[in-house]
Structure formats: C-alpha cells, structure tokens
Length: 477
Image 1 (cartoon, rainbow, N blue to C red):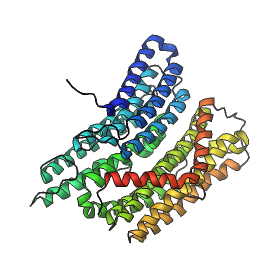
Image 2: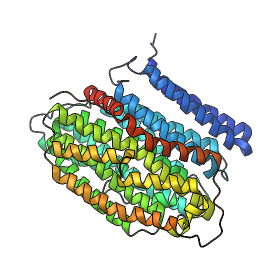
Image 3: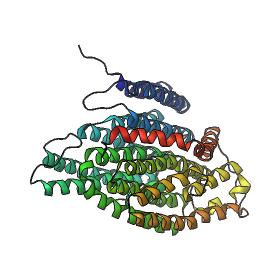
Image 4: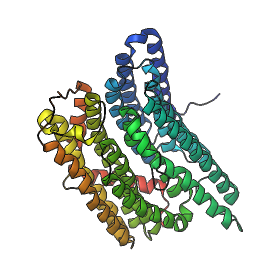
C-alpha cells in the first residue's frame, strides 16, 4: 500500500483547479472568462491554505516542505493573483481562457516543486513546469503579430537555455557521480566542475534575465500580453530565483568560490547595462523590461556576497538582502506593469507619450505608478529601499564593497528614467482620452501600493522568516 504524502496536497489542489478550468471552458465557452478567473482565484487561495497546512508536516528523500518551500510558494501564488486580475480584462477578447488560466496553475505547480526539491532532477522538473506554460501563455493572443513574434523568440531562446542547463547538469553528474545536491567533486574532475558551473549559470541566467542572457526580455515584455508580462516579471522570475538559489546555495555551495566570481561579474554588467539601456527607451514597457535586468543584477550582489561570506552572519545578511529584494520586486513591478496595462488598454500601446497628463486623468493609476517608481529607485521609507539597503550592506559585510558602489551608481542612473516617466505624467494632457480602469485592476493597484508603503513596518518579522530559511537550507560554517 502506498502512503500518501500530505506535502503534495498543494499540487493536487492546483491540478484540481486545472481540471475545473478546462471543464468550465468546455461547458461555457463564450462566457467562460469570468467563471475561470473566479475559479482560478479560489484555487490559488485554497492552495495558499494548503501550503501553510503542510509546512513542516511531511518530508521525503527528495523533497523538503519547510521554510524555503513555504516562502517561495507563497510569493509565486500571491504574484499569480495579480496575473489573474489583469488577465480578467486583458484576455477579454480571447477564447479558450480556461486554457490560459490552467497554464497559470501549472506554472505554480512547478514553483512549488522548485521550492520543495532536494535533488537536481526534481529541481529541473520543477523548472520546466514553470517554463513550458510560460511559452504558451506568451503566445496566447493568437491574432496579435507582436505577441506571436515575442513568443517565438521566447520559446527558441528558452529551449536553447534548457538544453544548455541539461548539459550543465550532466557535467555536474560527471564531476560528482551523483545528482544529489551538495556533492563534492571527484578527484581529477576539476574540468567537469568548472564546465558544470559555466553551463548551469548560462542556462539559468536566461530565466532570471542576466546580461548577456537577456536578449529576449525587451521584445517579450513589449510584445506579450500585459498579464503574461506580470507573470514573467512578478511570478515566474521569482520561481527562477528560487531555482538558482537551490542550485548554487544548496546544490553547489561547496564550489561557491568559483561561481561567486562569475556572479560578481554578471552583477556588474547587468546593473550597468540594464540601467543604461533603460535610459534610451521611449516605450514604458521596454523601460520596465531593461530595469528588470538591472534589478536582477542587484539580487546578484546578494549571490556574490553569499559566495564571499566567511561566517554564518554574512550568510544570513546575503539571504536577507535577496529575500527582501525579491518581495519588493513583486510589489514594485507588479504595480508598474499593471498601471502600464491600463495605458495599453486605453491607448493600444505603452509609448511614454501616452502617459502625458496621467495625474489629471486618473489619480489612482498615477499615484500607484509613482509610488512603485519611487520604490524601484530605492527611496525610503518604501519597501524597495530596504531591499537595496540590505543587499549593499551584505556586500560591505563580505568585504566586496565595490559591488555596493556599482549598485549605488546603477540606482542613480535609474532615477533619470523613472523621473522621466513621472515628469511626463504631471504635464498637462494633450488629448481627451478617458482612462478607464476595471474594478479588478483597481483592487490590485490599491493592494500592491498599500503593501509597498506598509511592509517596512514589519521588516523585523520578514528578517526573522528569511533567517529561518537560511538556517534550514544552508549548512553552518
């Protein structure tokens, strides 16, 4: 008799949601959108409950349902609520919306597997469960040529990155003789070890949008449906960071001196190139795309700091910076992209000129976007300031303060293009377009804005949670 592991309950709930959405789509067809959006919201909420229920209650040889699993599962599920509320309007002209929302739930199944995995093969399965639905979601507006082009680029580069990643994992097996995480390299396997590090960084660097693996981001962000951009920026990207943390902080922690150098270089070029490229953009969605590259570079400061750590306090400092910045990024980018979707929905594009006079046309959208942009700049006391502060502090603690200086330079550059958006928002409008916002989008904007302003009050509690994650996944020095 096979014993049921209660740890898989969140996966089963999401799978039940997939089946329910497909059934609704078949039965309703023309009017399925509202029903499947409601169904998806309910199943995401139910999954959050089951994630909290199974925490620390069930473990197996290859999976650990602990603090790390809970933290990243909840982030992915929360970000998916944003996707649902934006897609409610974004997909209003599309059929087969049950398929779209089912793909969203499948992606969350992959995120949960990534959070719980304690074996390289299981970890990779979770990675692909997140990636494959993302390609289909990007192409969901089938009659939109820009979306089709973006989805094709995304799929081709994604397939290449997956192939590179698999090759890297085979090098890991060759270097260690096992797919178990945390294994030491065999004698004489130094060449295979470095090949594994290079290939795995190259494959996973695509998903988190690091330079030079970033070529897909600008076109995909500007060409894909806005709800998919929210998924890529606020949900699947955080699952990808969980994947990379598992790979390097747990799977290859004993090789941190080698991969730490590479992440230091990638952090520098991602921060500088991402911010500089954003300066010259005239489309707000492309500005947000390139700023996402810079944000990934900031998080890589935490990776480099972790690799340079010499005691448990420095380990924790790096993880605190990474964790807070990931939470902040969900709030900041979720708000900014949702506000940009409102402009796209009313104007048909996201040119910066369409934002002219937004403060006069719709104050809710304008103030929400302004707060998100101030948070992205790192202006206190908004939550985004704490992410950068702890990342830069971690770099100083680990004696790589030069990275903190690079981060400050990048933040200074970002002020220019974020203020450019806000400046044009405050100018007198040159048209009489009435900016309309649906109720679900209003709810998301208000919720994310309030969290961005109020979460700093609970920063001590957030740090306690992240320290517990660090203690769970990382062996003490």
